[in-house]
Length: 401
Ligand SMILES: Cc1ncc(COP(=O)(O)O)c(C=O)c1O
Image 1 (spheres, rainbow, N blue to C red):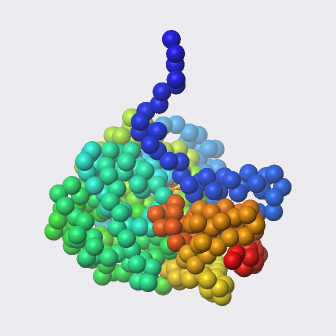
Image 2 (image 1 turned 30 degrees about the vertical axis):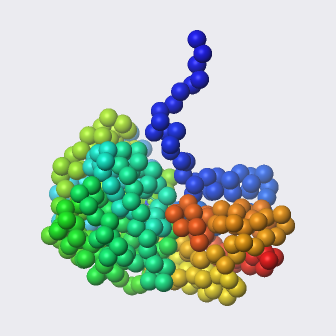
Image 3 (image 1 turned 90 degrees about the vertical axis):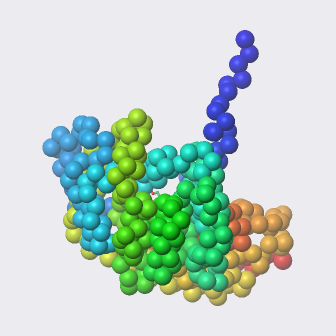
């Protein structure tokens, strides 16, 4: 009998994460000895703070190495509720929190919990690469909402209103944003929360970069600005970015009890509890000293100032000043249609390829985030690397004609 190794349609349609692919390619070239400057990484370059590592070491020594409750240990969920109270001024009960294996699993479970085939989820462009795939894996349809670089990538609330219909189940927002670093204003968040209340849909607020802000303000989301909308809001967050803990894989959801119960049920039939040792580390991260966060944010701010100023001195590049996260998203479309050294730059994909091959600088093409006019550069790397990367970038761009 012939056997053609059949696969499920859902996985045939699924595209692998483009950001992870670029990062993997840059790392592979580096491993082969190429002098690559990697400005594609989506993770802080700092080590996990020592007190957090110590909590994990203690967990191992104490034998805290068994299954835990599926939704996470009570102490960690308490630490999450304290964080949400401290930063957002909102009280959550323990059964309104589920801890997952990274922010990514929290979001995945969330979509699985609320989306049925036929539902639409509004995704502002540019978006984090995994949102459309997660919506589709849940059987839903992504509906894209454009945003305006000239308005600092703010939400266009009129266009949003025009996209809402009886199939709209949710909108997902990410402020500060990956890839733009944009932060929505309090007014935008309030209007969005009011719309969710009036029209009846969920807001999934991906707050993973919430503490990495440079505008002097604390974290904000639709619940903090409009607590009466809380039954419409699902908060997704985690410790990966704020505490430089990307490899530990701890994230969480906070939201209405039925949604959290459903997400926990999905988790119970897939991965069970997140890693017990990492949970202890995350508990320490959220409830221990927070000066490590301030130090990392201040280093990011210094680099942000440097990279934005330097990029805007390069002819043909336009770069907004991001208010958070650790990415810049410059408009490079003025180079499209040009060529050099056998490369024809049709769009962001060819430009990113050209920069990797010619300048040995890795960045992520904007098309991965739904907007081909841009590239994403991460400044989660030291200043000397950033400086050298931008010098190379300028030189390579200068060859295009
Ligand atoms: C916008 C956004 N949301 C969620 C995540 C997932 O974070 P985690 O590493 O905790 O799964 C990332 C990570 O890159 C991200 O950029």
